[in-house]
Image (cartoon, rainbow, N blue to C red):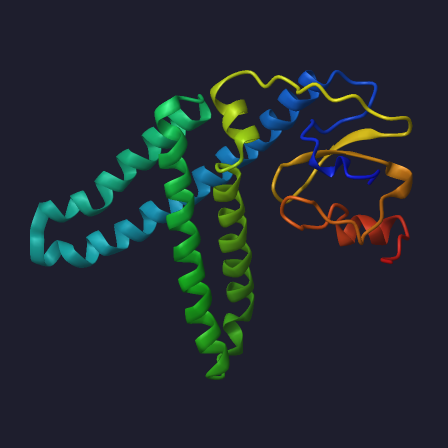
Length: 213
């Protein structure tokens, strides 16, 4: 990146695009994918609650239905409102994602213990749970980004940033902070100044034959 311009929060896209339009497009794409993950996490939470309700039914009777009916109502209403960008659903959605992340992490630990005990068959499920926990946790982090919160509550407007010659606008794939970069100087060793995450994925670097400095 050029100089100390990594602190300039701008929107992903090429220099030929209007920053405000590109910023809105970036948020829309991220919001859609987050809504999808929220739906999947909500379904998993309800299924787990269903299992607990089935186990409790012989002891509590019909009252045990509340064990899964309440999470079903809460998650469905939160997901629908979150997809519609209702203000009240912002943090409840983040809470659902956080709960799902913890559940996935606990399942990861259970399968890790089984793997260490010799049950190799749980390796694939362990890896899936690890990825699911990390993915949900990343979506929770998005909700602490002022850029994401602004995009959720209102139309995103681009800050006043003048691009220097040879620069374009790009977003950090990890924390959604978006930066002014020089594509010709970008390499796999470049890190986001906000979260220290890589700005170039390993897969992209391999496809383009880039070597980390």
